[in-house]
Length: 295
Image: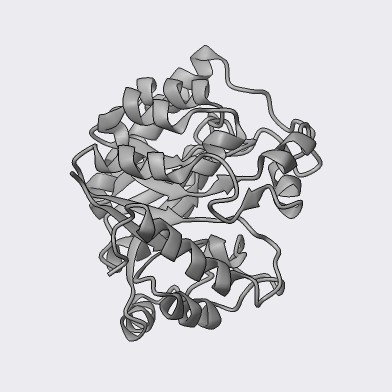
């Protein structure tokens, strides 16, 4: 049996942006992560945590934390998207690698805007194939230049969101360089089946984000943007939503490989005293259902 190694991320403290007055200050985030009992974190949006690698490593060490991955977006579905994508990805990858992490979580551009209206056309079959080839090349470059494994993260309202687009991406990418960051919340939000994805693509599950969707809120936000749905509380504290996490944890452990599973409850924006108690309860819940010790 493999070990599902639990961690957390700035997202679970209401952090979506590098700098936003509505967000938890990064110093408080690190203090509270450690206080909650976690020992692993993601980088979050580039610029939220210190970008000087010496300072960041010192802060992580001081809090007893290690970094599992960086996170970034790509625009590789656009014919001219390579240069802007690489500029943003490379700086995140450099800092991630400097922290000793081995993974980079890469997310798609959005086809829907915050107002709920489409801002780009969905990719057709040919566009998905071109996108997959470009993502594979990104993964190859990241492995070659930074020693990082690309974990592709489907995102609601993004060009890879529903289960059919996730499966198309896996078919169009090379597993040597690109695997799946299974985000249980985004998959469920878009009507997918997390357990089916684990069963169909056991060799492509490289990394996991654990989150749940409130089905009652989800039923009320059809046609709205993901950002607006989050503001209405669509992502909820386990075990109050879907998918059920114990079967997911069991299926991941049965893969017989060690995998990072990072708690990511989207809460932007949230009051400053909200995240810590949720983080403590969530860690206790996941540990009681097979999640590996954070230490």
